[in-house]
Image 1 (cartoon, rainbow, N blue to C red):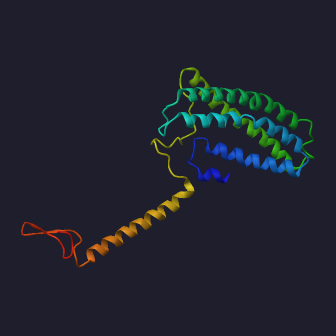
Image 2: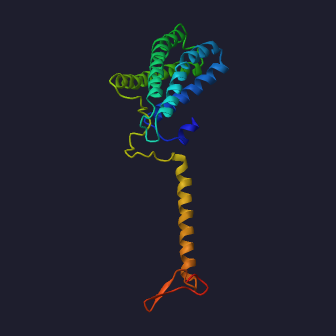
Image 3: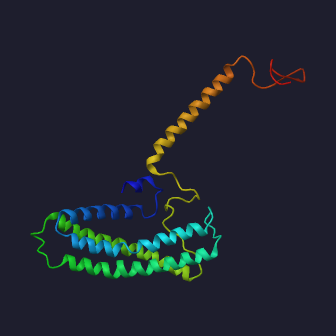
Length: 219
């Protein structure tokens, strides 16, 4: 959760924030309540899609230069194939199997007798499914783009408010950067004051149309 505030802000920043907070609460509930088996099944369903996703990202970085232009076509083709495996795994595990498990885990209970933490946890499971549906929508758009002859690109890379090529610094680093900038300006002002107060000119001066160097300086 804290790493989100240290990284560059992406388009789905708040979705990721809700996802991480919900996941942390659900893990805590599974450990301290007798629902470890349900939590284990859900983690088994959600984790497999991450493997081909990170492989595709790694291949994308390997096949592109610093400006994002493709320089290695074979590696980029393998990247597209890895992304296709990721999309299929995501759809099967998170869009088909996950809601079925959540439905089975949330039915047959007497909610009036269940602890409030468990009731909240069941609600968060449906919140996670809504997030998975949103991300699957983004993945579907990327799949259509690839099938149309485009390249795999992370549509979350830049914030919607950023139109420049360079990403802004992370929010938590802004105070530190402003402090460093203030220190640099103070140092520059101090150097200017020292130069102006120096009795001996640091640069050659012109006297009578001829260049005169300071005493002891280069001629």
